[in-house]
Image (cartoon, rainbow over all chains, first blue to last red; front, side, top):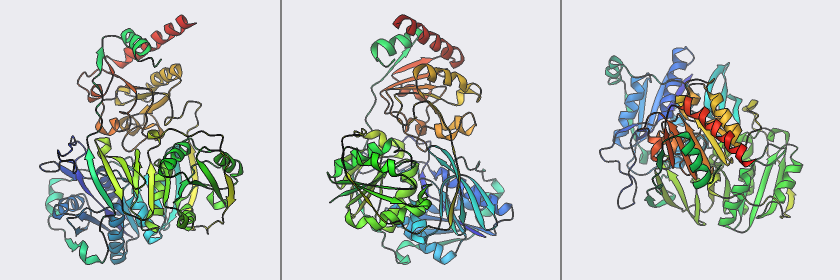
Length: 249
Length: 317
């Protein structure tokens, strides 16, 4: 079984986001970039499946500018066998990403495609579902547990009401929740070894897909600020404030 | 131009956020039609027809719609889509799972989790865990939109008298099988719609200690929330998680106990009307959004809080 894992390079989750003064976006210059956190879970799960002898190859793919190569390289350092970078400098919406991934799937013919359930930059939560629609494959979104059972997957999904379990036939798409596993850190020897693993570079424009944006971003603004609160000295003061000032109890 | 609203329900009744989505739909266009896809959901279709703003209900029934599998639902909507300019649902796990599958089939770039309708093609939505807001304009002919339910008021659940039309079911998607759902049943108010939410974080130290949160929630008739750290540590189940990848809540009163306030958690609660933080670390980021901060050991403060609330009730009586 072959697993393709899609990884996205995003602003690190610990960075305090700043909106550009001209309201065209957020500041990305000199800002730490990392792998989208649930994509780390997707890679980890694929590598674990391979280590358990249930997969033969793990391929990491990223779409973005040249520097997204670092994100692919990190996936290689934690156990992916080889990488693919689809290069583009333009904004790619989830619909375009899923069309590009569809091309990669047609070429690589994986049995499973894993990715994070949501990217923490645009917070869209679309790409996995869109890719499964384009391929007409089953989708298991928001996965917190995956079991492989004779060519099928049993996936536990985190839903608003609690947990749901579904069984899907392979080939399939799984989007991963942060609770799926504990991603490992890359060891120094593995980081060195990853430098020798191959990364195939493709240009998005060569894949025959129209990726021009359908959504115009008119402006990006700071969220409304909350007015500063106060510290109370005791529980009784807190209760008095909630009752007499805020009038919420 | 008409808007197609996808109703969320459990066959027996409508999910409350369908009412918020109906309001959002009505802000795009007056002609709101609602589709209900399910199994033995006759009464729920009737309830849907009574909603303010809903002009027509389309009911699609089959046994394979019983468990809301997106692979079964999407083709139904795609078939109906010709007659509509917009398709809309809530951005909760139901809508998040379903809408992109529809959008891709219609070759539309979806707009997720909108908090405001600016014009029928222009919307406001949070990005970067709500640390920025983007105004976006769709150039697609057909628009697929999910709405953040807490940003729209629920519509009236009575007064409407829409006609109910039945539409044909699509074939079953055989490669996905529903196995089971483990719902956490509770008599408490639902987290997404509760007036008061009491949340616990890593500072609770154990699942057992969460009973402090439970007692406080009982006293205030509140829903129980949690930070991701608390859910990851196994103190409480995932359906309680508030934050960027959990639920977004906007209660009148949000009480954060032993929660440091990572930006991912703030994303899910910082629009609350009044925020209280109880934390022993005076530097914790949660205090930056709290209206009332109490720097104290929660294991002393919460029992005192309960005591004070009890006193208050005695006075009121």
